[in-house]
Length: 136
Image 1 (cartoon, one colour):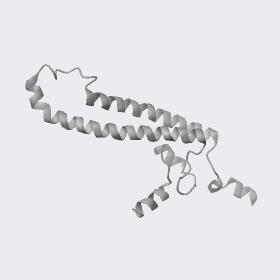
Image 2 (tube, helix red, strand yellow; image 1 turned 90 degrees about the vertical axis):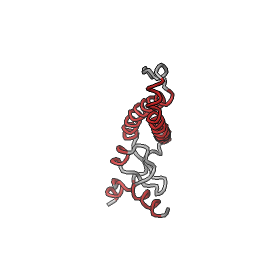
Image 3 (spheres, helix red, strand yellow; image 1 turned 135 degrees about the vertical axis):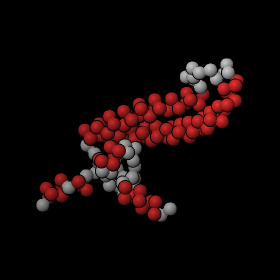
Image 4 (cartoon, one colour; image 1 turned 135 degrees about the horizontal axis):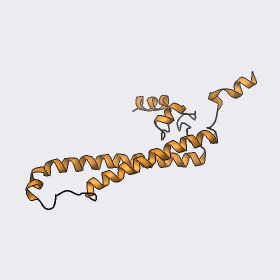
């Protein structure tokens, strides 16, 4: 009986160091991709990587100005979201170092591995998130 309780997953307080390293690898890979995408979006906004004829052809510029403004606006919004995603991933790395990664901040229960593999910066179990959304 005591062995059953000892091995029951709901009594597990935190993920093992090996499990944390697995999550760390996932997060680092996602972080590198996210930073690359963020840099690309920033380049679109600031024209840092532009090789087109935008400053040599006023006729084309007038015709495309509306579309360019919209795409810059969209790129700006996407860049903001990407920046927040990067911050969340970096915070997850800190939680790994503190060995608090994967623990629901609302219930104190472990967030299932499947959820963390899909949303590695998650701080809530699905149930806790649903409870929070109901209370809004």
